[in-house]
Amino acid sequence: MDWTTLMCSDRIRMATRNVSASDLRTEFEKDYQRIISSASFRRLQDKTQVFPLDKSDFIRTRLTHSLEVANFARSIGKMIGSRIISENKDGSFTEKMREDVSSVLECAGLLHDIGNPPFGHFGEDAIRDWFRKNLPLLEYKGRKVSDVLSPQQREDFYNFEGNTQALRVVTKLHFLVDEHGMNLTKALLATIMKYPVSSEQIGQDKDDITCKKMGYFAADADIFEDVQKSCGTCGRRHPLSFALEAADDITYRTADIEDAVKKAESMKK
Image (tube, rainbow, N blue to C red; front, top):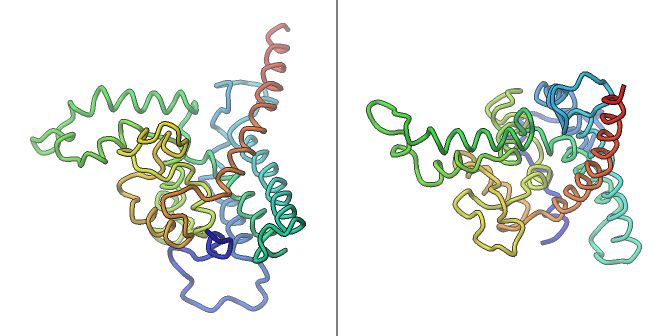
């Protein structure tokens, strides 16, 4: 892996017209503006973080949590980039790359929960449980749906995962201009794909955290392969995925305690 390739600023659909010389934004800064103004991102305001259906405006939602993760992620990106430069760990890593890394991580923080269903992990469990119980009973044109689907497609339903849905939301379900959704940079897409395996590969290596969950649906395999090839990750996690996870962990472990204390105080009243 090398940083020039890892920080691929290409998009699945490249621009077909000349970009105005007055537009001084980097491609990663354009990603931020596409995300922050999108309906898909705004919907996070009605999804709970920990406490469902809370009436207090103090308790965090997925939207406020995502903003906090984005802030931490950007700071972590700056620290990582500064250390690479100051300790001369990679001569090809430039000041511009440090800024790009920070921008990608900030955008990834905004997106990391965008595919989560209502009620978070409880929602994921409910979806998985429903399909395990009901998919074998569903029929389509006289045939069982489970027989029509490929093995990977069946496993996709049985192992539904919010991170996987996030990739689908930003590349297909969010309609912006065409079928490519937000059409974000490939470096950003690679960063939010925390688990670079299919549903059939879950748990293949119990010591490898990247096999813990699936990272893409069968219907999105072409996007996954394109992004992996462009960023040179070759079936492995993008390095910035680890920084994103650190930002998420730091954020929710401190914020959840704060929300719990506030919740406990309100219940005493």
